[in-house]
Length: 109
Image (cartoon, rainbow, N blue to C red; front, side):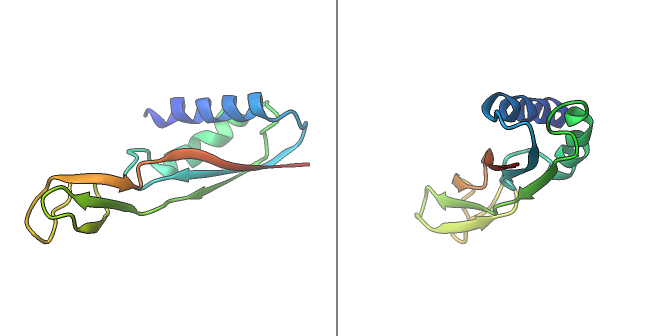
């Protein structure tokens, strides 16, 4: 499960960036095409945060939808999976949204 390492990196980054002794919530954005399983990150978060200033903090995860642009016809399409087919039949799709994994905000105090 690579989500354990990803979650550890998120916790480390938040702890390094935030000096406030009380961290109440971490807001993440995990795109549906990122290859990261949000439920696995939720499971790992409490384990990794235990014993740190993030212990007891809430984890809020937004899961933006995937979008892409067909390289054959230029159509913009919604994507639920990495492999998608355009209306024109092409599978040559450039992902434009939904591949992100980022910390959007941290609530402190």
